Amino acid sequence: MVGLSKLLHFINPIDYAIWDSRIFKYITEKKSQYGIDKVENYLAYLEKLREIINLNGYGELHNLVEKQFEYAISPMRAIEILMFETDRNRKSNNDRFIYTPDLGLKVIKKVGNNV
Image (cartoon, rainbow, N blue to C red; front, side, top):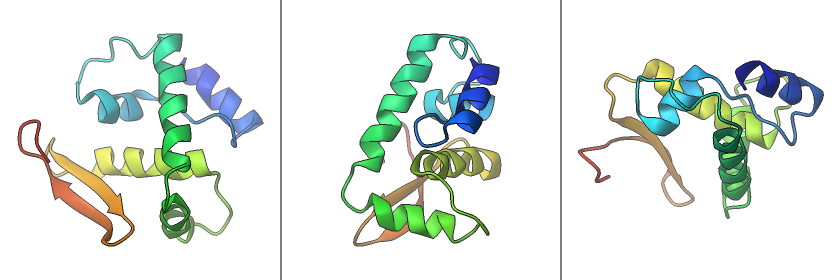
């Protein structure tokens, strides 16, 4: 699925996001990659990204991310970049980004299952 997701993304970045081990780790919070090759997990990921894109205030978040690049990025790519970079730069396994229209983009610490 990883290679296929990259191919699909480069053919059609509006409808397909990249699915790789770092994104999978961010979503599942597990070191194991068991399940990364399952089509249903990739399709569920795409559906969640579409839900996020349709949230009120997403456009502002997209603009914040896109300003970091010298070219336009798709809405799915912006979310994927946030997940990828959050996981890559995480100081602990509990750091997360949260975005709200009133507060903007913040890094939060997760304690157990509570935010």
